[in-house]
Length: 205
Image: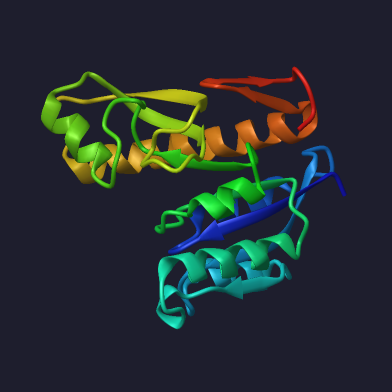
């Protein structure tokens, strides 16, 4: 079975699908044991059902405050005893309680070369800044916004005629490949987090 992954998503679930496809290979080293979302009725949940993967929804609107929502999300994930939690287009910030429950075991992707251009408009901000190289980042999640330790990055050239949509689409292709490759290396070889430094293959978490 390998490592146990819980994947959290909020939308179409294209990164989720890339992980589902990768885990069909027994040599990948991981199985997706659950897919969670903060929204019902999304495509990502359909993808989970198509893959016969257990799915759950923890909607913020169902809880009186963020702290209680965060605790409910923590408990929902904990039921599946994950070795690694992957935020794959999950559009909510998880809280400190969640992160303390899964220390160093929660990763996310961002469509820019962090620490430059964090936040929800990373592609637009990079393009407006005039960069010649954009890209994507896989990072360990902390309690900031795209501030966690960097695990891996990939570069994407910026074309002179790029608009935000065109550049973002090319970044998404690189992002899916980077996420699949990085998660695979982590679960097969182990990883360690020491301050800002993440090392794959140094030890098993």
